[in-house]
Image 1 (cartoon, rainbow, N blue to C red):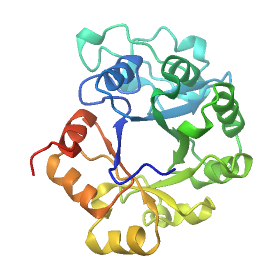
Image 2 (cartoon, rainbow, N blue to C red; image 1 turned 90 degrees about the horizontal axis):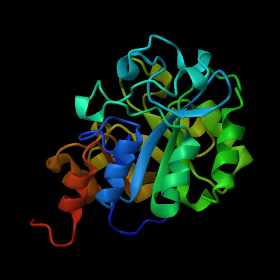
Image 3 (cartoon, rainbow, N blue to C red; image 1 turned 90 degrees about the vertical axis):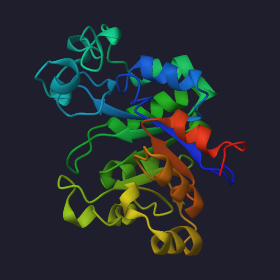
Image 4 (cartoon, rainbow, N blue to C red; image 1 turned 180 degrees about the horizontal axis):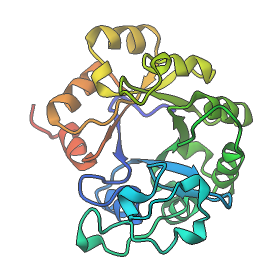
Length: 255
């Protein structure tokens, strides 16, 4: 991945500031605003489908108290995944990864985040690679996760597709993974996705300047942070409001 001098902007879960996350409505809004990249989350359903949803439980965004991995997609496909955000989005459905790739094709760079707990292989990596290859989007995708073990397996299957370890200091992240160790466990330390609060000038000098890592901070939702991340030389910026970041970074933007 070589995206040039200006950070590539990614819409976090589509356009999460203005549309329900991980829905076609959000991805379409990102496309309308000419956002070059989108970040999305995938889970493996009980019937081995790759559904695009963030949480491990469906309750927050659909109202159904059910674990994604224990639920077949046929029980999810008619759920309302938009009303929780705004009644205007009533009827938005949970999409499969193939639905997203089929509609948008090479119009986006895709940051596909694997959501999986535990070390054991579930088959999600093989299914993900199959979908990416079916649409011929190997050059448009990279795969990320807080969990370094599926990243390691995916990287061995498809070394041509970059993988990126995500990390932060949030309480639900195991302490051993809060400082980027997952990048080494995954076997791919050159692309990382730290929470933006992890990055300061010294950190950037070491990881970006000295180690030449591609760094994609998340979730950058204000102008001051976006300017600072860009000045540090990050490769990409992931934001709930990607239109704001695009405008800020445009050549004609005021200093």
